[in-house]
Image (cartoon, rainbow, N blue to C red; front, side, top):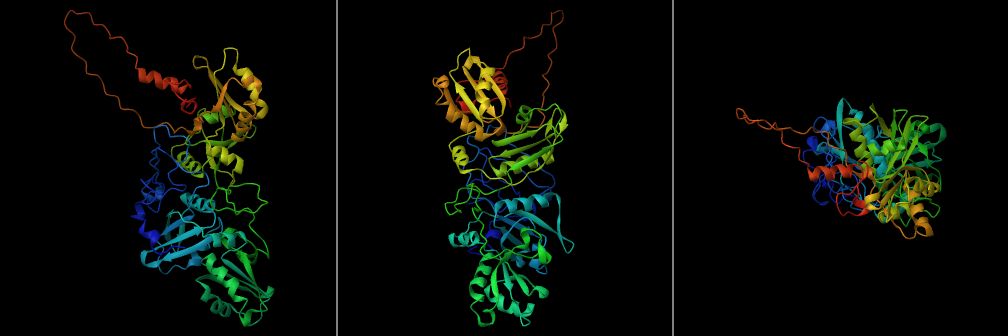
Length: 511
């Protein structure tokens, strides 16, 4: 997959101190620990995992990020490769791969002279899940802690993508084996197709499994082995990668003939080569956060007033269970907010939230296209008269879905309707533009306040004003308090009032 076996290593400097989420100046120059979905924030963020320098010195930008929240479409290239450090030459690939359970592996490549290895998954969400798992749980092989970081982005060839969609894995299933097909015999026959992780024969079932270190090698084996004389009577097909989950035959399973990964797209965006039966265009990735320990008096509005870091696709609040699920547009935003919650903490009504991961989710193609065109879950309504009240707006728009907040600003003659789902907002704005009652108003998407950065937790430095000695016999008078126009502008922005002539996307609501 890589033209140079050390290409990834050459892009990475100082592994032990590298920042897995460091934003760099240009994609061609950023290090191997680059953040997935590179450069999603215009202002940039910087976080460091505890194993790479001790603690998470959060540096969420204090500037308002540019809109839209990403500098590339949602279907942009995501990182699928994990860097593994402290991998010495005595460690066997199976020892490491036997600890992987988050998803199918495309390739495992070791660099023993550099004491490292690179593990590339088929799906970016699998890589992200593996990384998240080992943020809190150490990966230890032979009493040696393996360092976990990010590799650089890489892509599939079109041929390999088609083969994976057709069911190819790095595991080769062998059926109808005879007595001559021992593990040694199979190893000697298969090793010419590529490096092997493990060979296992289940004698009582007359089947076997060969796990290669890459899908490409397995494809060559499936295509070539059945043509050899000793293998003409043996069934040769793809098996299930044991890294994708535990199954029968002690972690090995048979995927089945003709089984296809219909609709799969490893890039998280629209793929014209997808199965026609696919209902979604983007691959399911970890973009949803679970939020627990919510105060009983909390409302959905409170959650949206607290969550920061990136635009939301949906917020689903279950008050009877005191939990919520928050889905972000970008998977990396969810990762950043998760790390912020684990280190700094997020609180609502004086109670610290418990934040974890929800299930992987995808974005339908129509919504993904709308997001790329600027859609948010917030609708801006301009040029409203005095008679149009918040109650009227809520009544008119609530038929399209749950609304968490309605704001009206009379001096600006505008209003904002915030839905809990971007899909409902897209439907509402399309319908209301053809509604005669709203034909004279300006309808557009407003800025999602959840896309604002977290407020800085660094205390401000106060410098005491030197006191001048008072003249004897003089009447000391306090200077009148002068109002700071910038402070007024900031205060107005806090409640949603624009400080000047601003577009709907720049008008801040509750921050």
